[in-house]
Every structure is written in structure tokens, then in C-alpha cells.
Length: 404
Image (cartoon, rainbow, N blue to C red; front, side, top):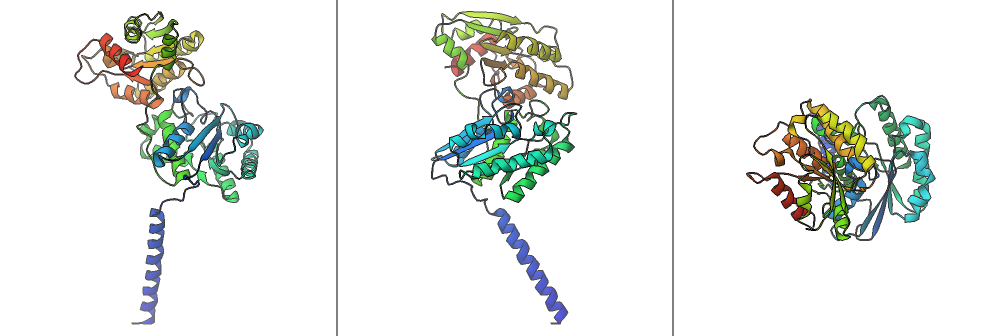
């Protein structure tokens, strides 16, 4: 064998060995950041995308989903995840409240997720300096830190994606310099956008805030970063029992103030009587006849939080939805958003599918409604397949089965 041929064979062998080793390394599970045989406390520090707000139904956000995901992966683990997200906050605010909201909790690990507000009023260099200081102060009490890039967004004048990408890259640079793990939520969102833009769109409550479907994906990414394993949270339902605020009032024998879209203004009383025959209900009618989904969005903004009822019943009729899909998604999402209190749920919200009132027909957006309500983490009253009973019966059965 010639020396040239021998040298070529050796080079091929080296390349094969290198790529085989790389492939094996890629298949190996990532190392967990925490020892789940011991009690672990995680604090998630961030802004409105971290905190519990109307975007995700008002009960939970990705930190709560992270705890569920970690317990799915480690059923016997003692894991506590604390949500330290506050709307409008930047890294400046995060530093100001770091002692009280994070370090005093004695966490084993801290996730840090800022950027969507920093990019509008905190210079990039200051943003990076603040992240570095947060890392240093957390490490001073022996807490690990995971930096999270902001989620992917719809391009707007206030938050252009080109600028957001600069802040994401700035975060990655800090993480590299300080050897901190990164959960790249922006990259994960962009990958989904490129793979299926419409599916990605349905994970957003508005231009910048993910709904619960988006938060579940964010929690799954964090689970991979922290536990080194993948988990699915897609099947996690809203908290049970449904209608907690209403049930509490019934237990106290207090009247229930209801804002209900027609025709359920007349059907909600007999439905609640399935729980308490003596219930007292004060109903405010929300008329839907002849209105488009965009009009109902405006009305939701104007009336629900001002009224602050105990229960909101949403049921957008099929004939209200003659706009394009994007316009429909925007308006329907905001009907749900405005029908919730700003932060943690202060009243109940129930959505009734149009098939309940109109079983004889099918609408082109029937499945889209189901997707949107599920993504918002709200309760949906739907008509079972081949069920021909009245709308009153469908609602009454659902209330009896789900609200006890």
C-alpha cells in the first residue's frame, strides 16, 4: 500500500472516529443540574411572561408548569418552584427585589428571564451588567443560575425582532463568559415558527405574551435544561374543581353575580341549581345578536373588569366570526383576556362552544375555538359527539360533573 493511500486511510479513520463520538455524545442525555433525591427549591425570576396573569388563564404560568414537569420526571422528588415574576419588570427591578423575592427563599437554583421590557428602556450593556450581577449574588449563596432568553414574539414597532435578537445574543454572551446554563426560549420559539408558523401563532395570547400552550412549551424547555430529560405537558388540564370562586360563594350561601353572553343568561341559573337548588343568581346580559367578534372584543374590554362579576360566561356565536383566521384569533383571544382579571383570577370564566347552542350545524372555526380555549387554560363546555340534548341539559350536566 502506498504511503499516500495509507495516509488517506488514516484520515478517513480519524474522521469516522470523530463523528461517531460526536453522534454518541449527542445521543447521551444531558446532565441534570440538580440532585432530585434531595429537596430542591427553584425560584423563577422575571417579568409578566414569568408571573401569573390573564395570558395563561390566571391560575398558573410556566414556573408552575415547570414544577409539574419535574414531578412527572421524578415522581418521588421534593421540588418546590416559586414564581417571582412581576409585570413590567426589567433586570433593574430584578436586582432591586433579588434579596426579598429570591435569595431569602434559599433556592438551589434560580431561573432568570428578562429582556422584553429591558429592550424598551434598559441599554444592552446595562442589561448584560445586571444579568452578571444577578448571577454573582445568587452564586454567593450557592444557588445555580439558568439564564433564559425571552420568548419569540410577533414583530411590533415597540419590540422589533431585530432588537430582541441583540438582547438574546447579549444574554448568551454573559452566560458564556460566566459559564452559566442557558435555556434558549427564543431559539425554541423561532424553530417552531419556521417549522409551522400558524401552530406557533396559536401559542401566543397577544403579540408578545405566550398563552398557556406557549408556557407549557417554555416549561418543557426548562425541564430539559434543569433535569436533562424531555417531558410533555400538553395534556395538563386547568386546575380542578372548575368554578372555584362560584363554589365558594355557594358554600357561603351568597348570591353569584354573573355576566353571561346570550342565550346562557337564561340557562346559567338552572345549571347552577344542579349544585345548589337554592342558589341566588344576579345576571347581567351580554347580548351577542348581530355582533361581530371584533365588537365583542371591544365590549369585553369595556365591561368585564369594570363590572368585576363572580362568573363570566363566554359564548361567541358562529355567525360572529366572518373575519379571516388571524383577525378571529386576535379578537377571540382578547375576548378571553379581557374577561379575566389582570393577575391571579379574581372571578371564574367559563367558555361555551357554539356547538352547544347550535348542534345541527358545524362551523369552519369550531376546532379553532377548541384550540384557543385549551391554549388559554380555560374551562370549555362542549357538546359530546352524537349528543342531541338541549343546550340547557349540556350545560347543566357539565356544571354538575365538573364544578364539584
